[in-house]
Image (cartoon, rainbow, N blue to C red; front, side, top):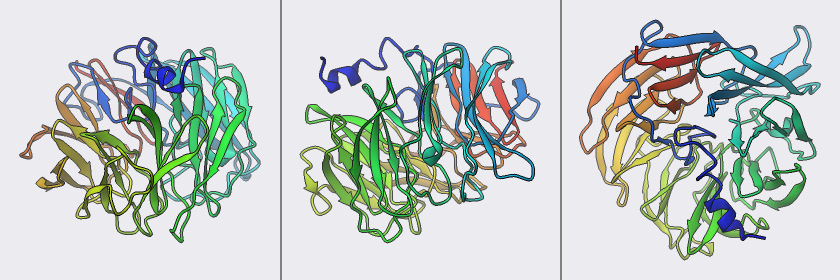
Length: 411
């Protein structure tokens, strides 16, 4: 059997096509796309290749693999708490629905935040399988025809504000955090069968235990580590057995949402609510509690609660929930620029074709030139509310709105 690190190193190359967008934040999980000729200007009518209604509600971001686009959605029966949780498959060429499969039918979804729903985690597509996650309501795997291969409903916890973080597929393990009202933990499922492989409790100093972050697998010191922020601390785990490798604490930070970003030997993650602080942590040589030894720098002004950061070249870029975009020198945290874009933000930015793409909650897209000085290239009004992040392909942006799915393309 191959070591897990070798399985991980080959899991994307040769399986995911060059410009596919197979999981939350794209092929690297960090918001980068190799796509070319990506649109810079659009509106509700300009450069809209197609627009189709999406049945049900949800803020899972689109994923695109092999000419197909996948979303999850939740619907309730009028006058009842009964729900249907579904996976939708669309043709990217024209927006036609290829299939629409019901996966779970819970009697109730429980409480949720007004900006959240019951279909917020983003699917993962790899090796001809579609992995979907609905938090405490269940996790499942489907084949390309929409047939359910397995369902997992035994991972039980009490959420706060509904579902949030997406899973990470690390070799043959589907890994996600379960940071609920109490006793938070992280768990790994066997991607082939859905069977639970391990579960690790997360010991946190934070009073509020709930968080919603998506893990990120990185290679450090010759081995794979799964990086998973939670309330009070950034944690690293061995994906083989779930053993905690190290942690870096950030006090009472809770409801942590951002996915980590890794580059220049540093991990970048926000401590989220109530007063977000951006932390740059060195994972090399880390063991145990490294709070006093491995934090390279911190930055509070304009740090995000919800949108993940993005690293391009020497700069780290981020936008606060209140719409302040900032660029800092990645290795030092020195501010390059800070500018107000406008509106409230939840979606994570992407980088494609040499440009940064930000999107606020009213669907306004901002195209920014990366570099040490701020340069706004375009501002685009879509005219529909959205909290989902973009998916990118050659000549294309896919945008999930509150009611519709859009393909934006140069025309």
